[in-house]
Amino acid sequence: MKQNIILHKNSKTVNTTIQLTGSKSECNRALVIEALSQGRVKVTNVSDAADAVLLANILRNQESGVRNQEVVTAADEPATENSQLATEVNIGPAGTAMRFLTAYFSLEPGEVLLTGSERMKQRPIGILVDALRTLGADITYAEQEGYPPLHIKGGFEQRTDTVSIKGNISSQYITALLLIAARLPQGLKLEIEGELTSRPYVEMTLSMLQQAGIQHEWEGNTISIGNQPFSETSIWVEPDWSAASYWYAIAALSDEAELFLPGLTAYSLQGDSVITEIMANFGITSQFKDGGVYLKKEPKALGRKDFNLIKCPDLAQTVIVVCAALGHEATFTGLETLKIKETDRIAALQNELGKMGVKLVEKDEVYTLDCSGKFIPEKMTIATYDDHRMAMAFAPLALVIPELEIEDYMVVEKSYPAYWDDLQKAGFSLSQPFTKA
Ligand SMILES: O=C(O)C1=C[C@@H](OP(=O)(O)O)[C@@H](O)[C@H](O)C1
Ligand SMILES: C=C(OP(=O)(O)O)C(=O)O
Image 1 (cartoon, rainbow, N blue to C red):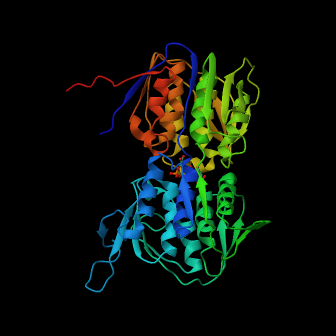
Image 2 (cartoon, rainbow, N blue to C red):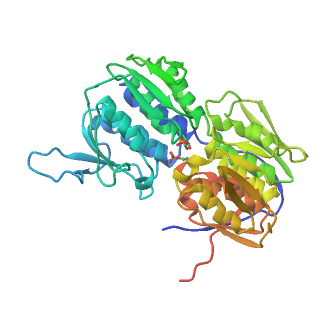
Image 3 (tube, helix red, strand yellow):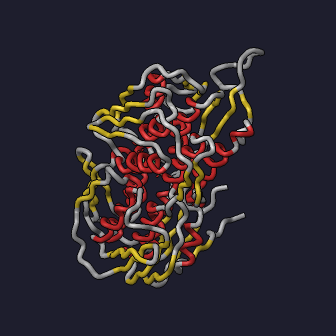
């Protein structure tokens, strides 16, 4: 059952140490690499993020041939005595896992019906399916053309080594293909058409493959990976910088803040570590020492007004909510992909910021905050739209709004299950709303 939570924060001071769980993005890549490496690569510091835990269960249970799921017949192929049975794999709301597994199950022998939550069935996957079909994969749509669920008959014979793919919809399609590339008999030459969105995520993939012994070349718009073996190695998953962004937001909305986040380094594979630069504009200093990062709030006039978030879309809600709370009328670009994430994040932000009189106005793909009608309500209830980042990005508003209610608070489990416990540790008080019997 979906439940709400009410947040209060009396003092505007925070001073604590928060140990963040492993990065969902790094962990999901590492798990796929581990599975593809046939026992050579081991993942350590597996994330507590529900999406990563689910992916680990699916991939690590495969040897038994069970994949931890019920065996069903694919919807587009009624059961007959001769038809093969497909194993149903349900990845819920995990977009990254959906995309990575589409490539993975195309490669590995076996038949799978890969499905997810209702929202997952609205998140496009046609670009990836087309690319895999060009390579030779056998994938059919079990419901709507271009969207999950997918019926995948694995173990395809490779037809070509060269595939062209649009870069501006989701980098996850590109990562999915790169992850399996070294196991393709002919390797892969991936030509990226047009602009590449979320580029640091592709760089993260290539770096992690390199850690596992897989070499690549990236020349112009083409990434090439030859058929090659994985090395014996272990991959340690760094703490999650996207999760760290909520602590930067908390610091930005506090009067005094001193926080220590162990395990985070300046040389992260995660593009979201750019939160250190973004939040420097809000007076938050980041000092890397003792194997982690110290955040400190320093008095500073708000400067920067333009934020291009094309490389770090998961920071959009964090940064936009902080700007709204501070009445900082900034403009944002690079937000095009937000409409196909866990929810339409643009619409969700517009609705929820509207509850404090702030507008997020779009013109020619430039989004501007209009704070002219901004007010601070005594109580505000935030809808979260099955999106963990809506809950986590709005919670810091408890530092400015006396009573903040967050709907369906358990949604944070997707990437940061300990979020509410950590807020309590930082001095936020949490209570369940009174519900009539
Ligand atoms: O590869 C990844 O781990 C991710 C890539 C990004 O998606 P897009 O490439 O679709 O923007 C990001 O939003 C998502 O949370 C994680
Ligand atoms: C977009 C996200 O995740 P995914 O695409 O993996 O569902 C996210 O974590 O913000």
